[in-house]
Length: 258
Image 1 (cartoon, rainbow, N blue to C red):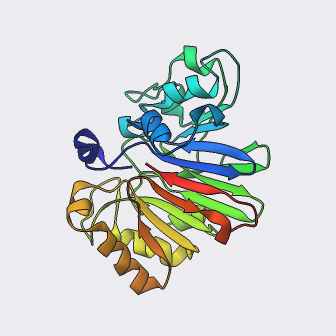
Image 2 (spheres, helix red, strand yellow):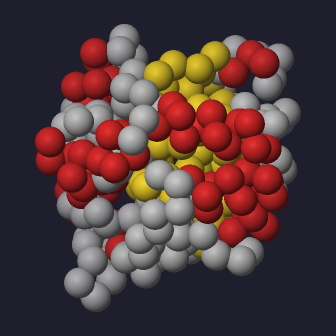
């Protein structure tokens, strides 16, 4: 997943994050441009999705949501799965959204989430987290099931209290758009993420939504800086990255970024 300039140039793929097997469910988070094509490219099946989560109303996070809904509902022939999104995504808020048609939403269960609101999908508890971003209704997500907790900040700048939402995460996935201390409004840079990683202390930290400066500046080196400073395993996401989560839980689960 990448920022707007990386999106329009496709310097990095923008299909979002897919988590398979958590609580026995398959979930796609923030399906931006190319999500459907990348799903097939990396050997996954969109028809087997159980949930689609969309954090906010920016194109690089929602553009393929409708085609994934069509896959999840078997060509719109069955009412199946759940779509979870911010208010802007589902209903629209001022100049933001809505991003998914009523035609598509009527074929799934639908949940609008705001910070601190929770929703259960079978064995999974999903909690929405607060962000500070251009879309004022934007949210992140925490997914908990049994032994595993995965946090996804989505797009947000660092703020005091961000760590409260993500404390206890085994895996912390964050949008980190700029290297070092090059902050821009509504996003985190390397130094911001390093602070969050220190406060949350996950088993694994992953930087995604990399901006052009981060890509050109060598994102792997930025991850190494965080790893050396914090002692916490930190990775910069790359196209098609696949992680087996057996190190974190007893049952096999996978995480894919594309």
